[in-house]
Length: 226
Image (cartoon, rainbow, N blue to C red):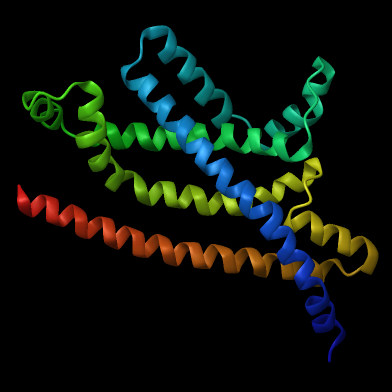
């Protein structure tokens, strides 16, 4: 067996375990919390009082205008100077959550804005209050618009978690770096890590395509029923 293949086979369990233990949980938690934050931010920008709108706009402006790696460094390496000490994983989770929240807020805001005012009027005419109209009428329609870009954000997040290696989170990419430090085979190990990321992204892209088809069918049924 070639040396490079043996090395890949020997390191594969370690890399996969790092992915299961750190990369996947970090991705899922960051996206879940970020999506919740993004929805709250989008609602604040669309319907909140002026001070809240300005605060939400400022948050989105700062996060979207600065690199994710810098944000992680500020949280993990910068905050200790203010007496705020965070372990690597929580620091990464906060950083990714804030980043995802800013980007998803713009997606959700655009999706909600795409729903016609007539849908609001129809909901209010049936006796719904604002919250009921949002939950039962507006968000279900906005979700059809938001699903494709939100799916792209999730897939990008899977790859972006590799940046957590810079703040010592022992996820997939840092595990590859540690093996490189002992084997002195950077090309083989980094290619293997890239293949794993590629496999994850390919699976998620396939699921995204199926999800979009399903939402398109649902949307077509809604359109035909009107």
